[in-house]
Image (cartoon, rainbow, N blue to C red):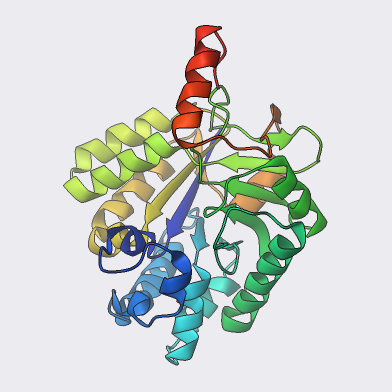
Length: 295
């Protein structure tokens, strides 16, 4: 049985697309423009739509990842968060934990990381009364040190969607543990996530059926991340995707919390604390490949 973990990323696209905004996340936190990139009513629409899907499809589960800056601005603008609060009460909905804000530099402090995560967890609880069981590694590179801090925070695991430096020989559709800690790790299937967004954008029902066929027996768990923008404007194709998954005897939707509790890890994964990027990474990777080592 292959479990499908479906995740909605909120407003990630708007950060990437906005050329008029400084690329530094911290500057975005200090402006009102982040929220205004999208009509405020859309957040209520998407929460109501998800509730309808959960009511209509009894086996549908969903994971939501809300940036801290979005939560803060929704609160500051006195936006009606009742729809998100209703989602937080639902047993088949899970909200992921994040950091409160992205560091301005590349230095790493374990204490600061813990404070950032605890601040976000408190913000999520105060805003929509949602509990956090899983950390979403989106703005940071996953490392052994970061996983050790996640364990100290009593979180049940981590889902990694920042996959640039994930070990290339580890298949994303399985559960792993860190080599030193008893912390389970889920990994975004980046290729399939991008494919699903393209299918939603193109709007071809036959492609959805073919896509769901490709998920069968692909592994223990397929982690699919989609920006909510695609769901908001392609709702009929999400319904078809859910319907096709529910038609398969060996596919089922699930939350990452339940996956972490029920699915055994198939092996260990190592995430070095020292990350090599840019030209140095290319040189280092080329050298390893010369000796037949995959990085």
